[in-house]
Length: 143
Image (tube, rainbow, N blue to C red; front, side):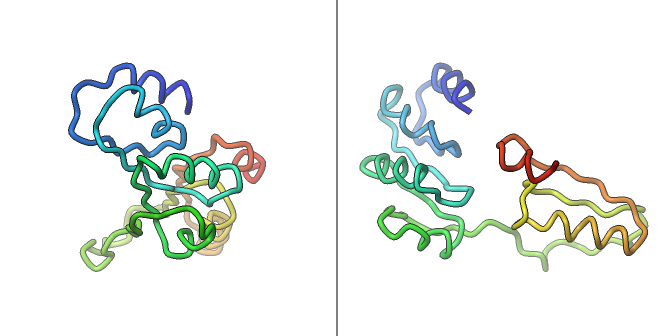
């Protein structure tokens, strides 16, 4: 992530606003721009990440993705909660003739990949997986 952040901010031109989805980026934003900065917390708040978000909150708007996440560390000032997701009613239901099920998400217990594997096995259909697996805990869970 740090290598990506450094390269991204080195290439930053004149912008109106920065919405950075990394943990490190907002800490570097002030060195490269006077534009307002917002960041979205995409994972659980750990003690270390909470310390960093608390530090950046003086000049960065912080968005949480759920009320549970926002309340998990009460002293991190969450500017707004904007839920992830989509209106499933707006997605047409297919015929089911694609021949496979699909899982998209992170490799971790709370995203339900184990359940997706079990369901696909019980249904006797292939499962295609597109998942983030970079963090050590994600790799460990996969193994």
